[in-house]
Length: 60
Image 1 (spheres, helix red, strand yellow):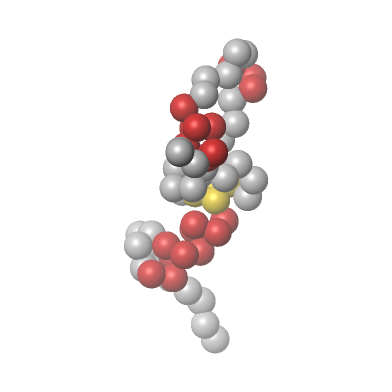
Image 2 (image 1 turned 135 degrees about the vertical axis):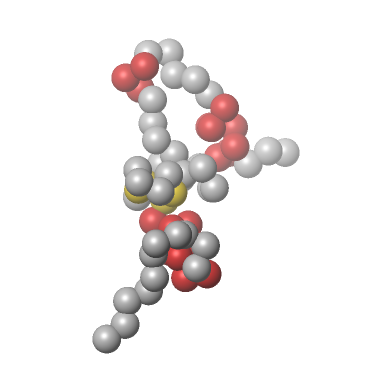
């Protein structure tokens, strides 16, 4: 059985104004970052692994 998020990604809205930005990795719609096409959770995971170019963890 497919995950709900993968099903939601395939749906096309009846009207273009109803289109929702979703994380390409997990399908989450809340906490979406447009610059990276990721949700905040996936962004943090990938940034900590060093897989997002130009982003590094701050420390002081």
